[in-house]
Image 1 (cartoon, rainbow, N blue to C red):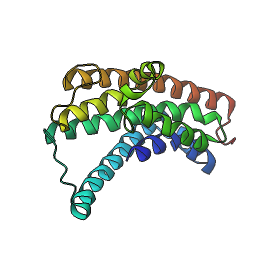
Image 2: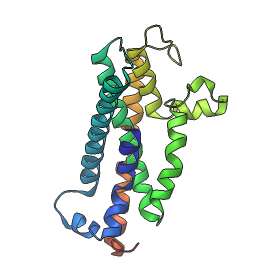
Image 3: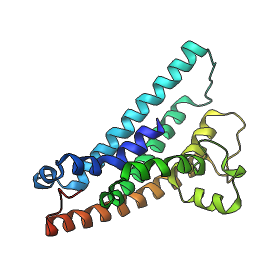
Length: 200
């Protein structure tokens, strides 16, 4: 679920460049940044489908008895968290255009992001310096909000409410989006000026 959202969003431009379709995208009336954002939202949707499939399989086959305190709120935080992962993927996508090994770099960055965001272990179990990095990652706040919405008696990593967590996640994700947009616009301008779309 997480990998699909992050990895697919990160690799999207590099995939076009390797297959020689980036020039066709650049010559289309739609701006490159809009195409990449649309793909990232689609990747988040596929990640959401994967998440629901995992829950269904876990219940039907393993009879986990997963109980969520507030299913509607949990679902909402899950969607926003996947979008926040897609926003990180957008930044990677822009940054990895200049690398021939973007898929390797994404794979290397993937696991640390899950750890730092609290998907693998609680953020409070990380060293203090790593916790500061966690607070700068939008999905950290989304995962914390998901735990607040699903686990009765869960105490937030900062003692804040689920709504504050969601607000912080949205603000940080929006900042990621603005940074990625600026990077993608700069890259598109550079590619148009140098005619380097097919170089890989």
